[in-house]
Length: 102
Picture 1 (cartoon, rainbow, N blue to C red):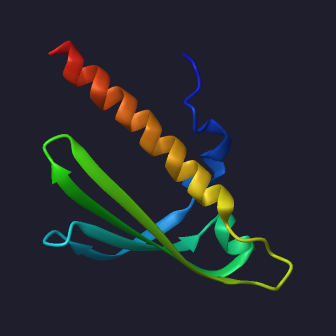
Picture 2 (cartoon, rainbow, N blue to C red; picture 1 turned 60 degrees about the horizontal axis):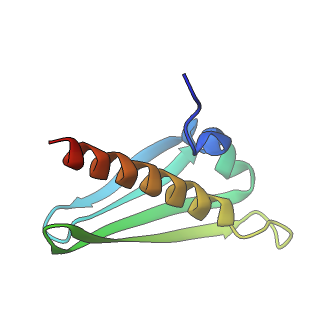
């Protein structure tokens, strides 16, 4: 079995997260990291996800990160954005392929 395109980000998924809010009306979800790799560099870390549909085959995904660094030497969490982008591209490819097979 080949590795997934987001395999380099696997350590991010070994994190315990808690659901903070799920808003079906606004198509958004918020969760916070409670344990794991991210909390070695950040005192707190939350992710806000929102999906905005613009038609049958068009959707915009917005990711907002809310975090507090342990100290000023900790870099911004750009790799989290890279991981999410890889996951979305992977999912999009498979959704499109699945739709074309029907």
